[in-house]
Length: 83
Image 1: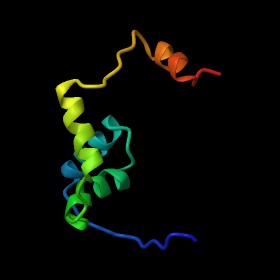
Image 2 (image 1 turned 135 degrees about the vertical axis):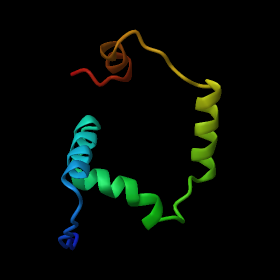
Image 3 (image 1 turned 90 degrees about the vertical axis):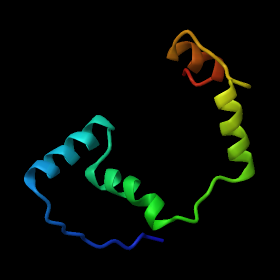
């Protein structure tokens, strides 16, 4: 099933537009994705992490269950992702 879309046109100052484009580029996002990312908490305020996600965040912040690698290549090897 295809997602239905619509066009949104917003007038903003050129300087603000340039800053948004730079911010999107720095984060390797399209301008559309940057705007949707910024608006996500406003558009979907009921989205909250479940208990499993909250526990994973807590463990990560405490350094529990983390694995370190010397390089991306080592990580790929150990995870079986190098082909």
